[in-house]
Amino acid sequence: LVRTGIENGYRLRVIEAVESVNETQKSIVFDKLSVAFGGELKGKVIAVWGLSFKPETDDMRESPALVVIDKLLQAGAEVRVYDPIAMEETRRRIGDNVTYCTDMYEAVIDADAIALLTEWKVFRMPSWAIIHKAMRNHVVVDGRNIYESDELKEAGFMCSRIGRKQE
Image (cartoon, rainbow, N blue to C red; front, side):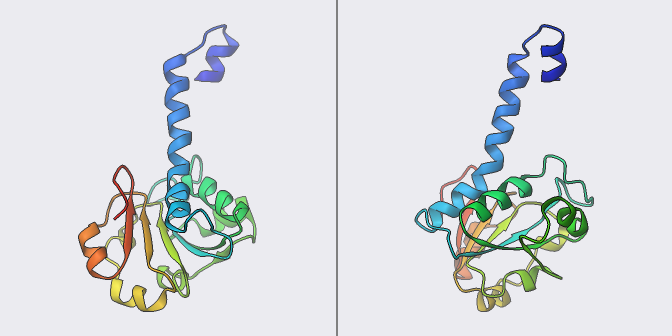
């Protein structure tokens, strides 16, 4: 829409503002991960759950995962990813710069943090006890606000959610 407006001599400032906010939103999960580790992500292992733009599809257009993964790699983090459907599409887009895992539990082995980016049903009720034992550090950044922070804190995790203070 913005490009069409410009091509026809119009500036669609409201649409431009919406696009700007949407792009900023994609960086929030990365920013929360960075804060959780004092700004130092080099050498950290981050498990990314959910790669597609929305659940039940492999559609990667506008997916926050592409932005978050790129920023994590630039910061020197090791990235381990899992998505029920979008693994091949992700590989096509970003190559072998990340570790592709067979399930969400494999992704968290020796991980320092989990970044939830797509609200697939499979991610809704994980076994936090199993995950806690598998991880090196216990940080969860819930980019979809599907987890109860009290439940995560009780299981021994530090939880950070979108639009809420870190807990």
